[in-house]
Amino acid sequence: MNDTSDTDLMAGAGLLFLTDEQLMKGSEAMFFAYRGFTADPDRILAESGYGRAHHRAVHFIGRSPGTTVNNLLAILGVTKQSLNRVLRSLIEDGLVESRVGTRDKRERHLFLTEEGNKLDRSLTDAQRARMRAAYSAAGPEAVQGFRKVLEAMMDPDMRRRFNRMKDNDK
Amino acid sequence: MNDTSDTDLMAGAGLLFLTDEQLMKGSEAMFFAYRGFTADPDRILAESGYGRAHHRAVHFIGRSPGTTVNNLLAILGVTKQSLNRVLRSLIEDGLVESRVGTRDKRERHLFLTEEGNKLDRSLTDAQRARMRAAYSAAGPEAVQGFRKVLEAMMDPDMRRRFNRMKDNDK
DNA sequence: AATTTTATGTCAGTGATGTTGACTTTCCAA
DNA sequence: TTGGAAAGTCAACATCACTGACATAAAATT
Image (cartoon, rainbow over all chains, first blue to last red; front, top):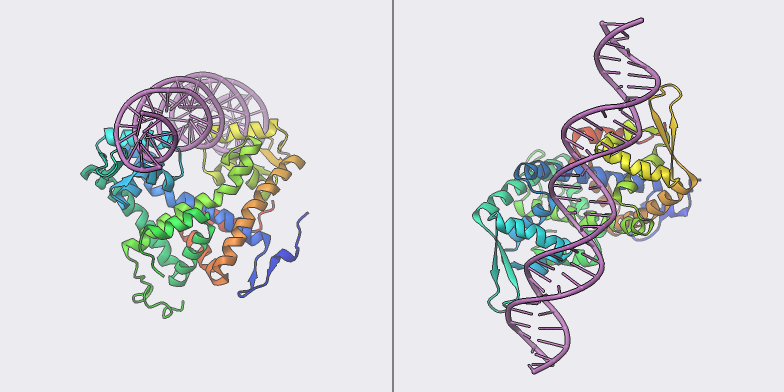
């Protein structure tokens, strides 16, 4: 049933020995790690009555103030109907401000209010703390490898977008 | 261990120089990478009329044949009501078999049927292909680091469980 | 033997998040 | 002026998660 084919052996500039078992463990590590990754923000969000979708919207608006709805849609990879529901609640609750574009009045530019910034900061702080702890535990070389693999795992479109988003280290 | 390799990332003994910006980029990389990570299985599942919850159940049953419902609950971190809905549909569709325990008749031991194995394989193959591609692109040292950071990012309970899962064939 | 705990299953209700489809309003640009 | 892009809205629906309440059976404990 279980093959131990020659796919275990990858030849090339860097020789890579990867068994199916190692790849499967990698997948599972990704699954469990992502759970840990979202655990702290989820707790904070639950208190505020928001979910992960709100977190993502707040995060990327805080990261790129004045971003348009369309841009946010592309980053988040959801439908405008789904995003609209989230944005509406954030705007109603006074966490996000939507300003009609000056150059193109069809566009809405999104900004965090002071209250929105407060939530953003508390979420970011929590997530940063976990990232920092994980990085510290794993060591500096591990961090480089971590980032390289994550980038390689993205869909090409998202990788391009990711690398265009802000100044890259490494 | 070797603390002298990346001076731009290292401070003294075990302390990392990590700017908030670097940590934030790490978080975003995690977010985008996870989207890529689930993209291929999601496509396959959509054709079969299943979701990620089914994927996870099928995966871990395939990985540990004979596992109990309770064990699966702990691994997946969902409520029994949520898991039950998923398991019921998988059993009804003939992908999973539930056998009453011999030693403890309260327990149900879960197994994949031939059809369940087929779905599991197609999902696993897709995810493995992406993992393999990402690993190849990132290089062998990166893979080590990737795994180390992911493990450090897990909640302690899950990390223990993850590391205990290695040879768990029951 | 009686009671409690454990393991599982089920029903009902709720909420967050996502989808498609159909439509309107606004407004830039050919 | 007309076509189409951008944004918003509404309806309907699916998935997946949650809580709470309850049922059943069997193991464990008293």
